[in-house]
Image 1 (spheres, one colour):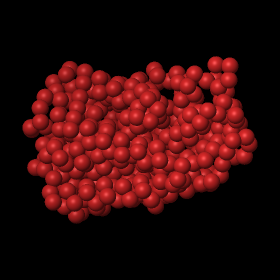
Image 2: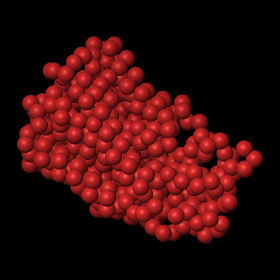
Image 3: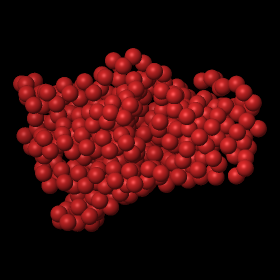
Image 4: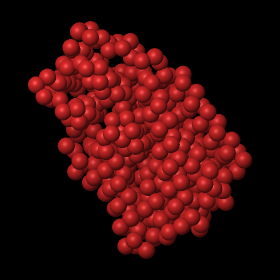
Length: 72
Length: 360
């Protein structure tokens, strides 16, 4: 299952909570849209604890974090 | 990942927290966002508590340090619109709570590291307040999204910080300088400013946050930010031991009172408020420097709250917490709970397969 989350403009720690909720719901491919490096860093740290892989793509301050749970 | 950075930033904050006392800042108050914003409020004449009036350059340093480094690394971004007026009032509530305890979470750690056990009671209150905030967050609390703004919005607080420094340097007749009391205890201007700049820079990079450290432990079992707070404690503890400032116990601690109930409740208000805001007063000040105009509203709320606290006798003193302060803390706490309930919406639904959520 895959899903997209938009966490742009949300304060700490809401981006992380929403990503966590998505992971806890069993989604395996999640694309998170963020607009701050802090959010991207925090999500990356969360994902690491979930033993998932993720890539962060920075397009002029728009961060796309692609989380992949499969194969782990 | 950035573990070394968060620890280094904590060590630097703790180190200056003690060193500035050595250079003249009040005891156990080398750096404190609440106390220093309160002093600035007095220095500007917004309140007339004669003992706490001085435009502390450390605060301008936090803002400008963060501003400079954020520009340098490309993280300066003018943004805002996430419940600005609510954030202003939360900032005010946080200041009322902090002045009942006599310190922000940063000073709480500094007080703890100097053996002040009243701060331990405060720490329990702080954690309790954060726990209440986490309950709201788990149920979907949100102050809403912020959006990109034109850069002038992000410049406002850094410019204010510069104006404060100019006011201090030129000392026009209409600003106030305490002649006795904590406001008269001050490290030399350049040392204070430099320390503030350095702390602002490293905290901007490391995202050090005293409220976040317990919040993240509770929410996602992530100790990352806790390393920063522990580093402040250890560095300041070593400094206090080395300089002979360490004094273990409850009674006779500098700029502190022994009223446990209000030490607990004061910082519980701060913990809850900081969790609803998404960061402790230090972090909010640093974010205001990065262009976050919502954090800037919090900063103004702190400034206004400090003036309010002293004008209406809410602020505690070493003698204890007066009736007005007790009412102030209770009302501030009740306000924060009201905000918590009001801004907690039903659980966010995450659409499966495509579609980007824009529900709020």
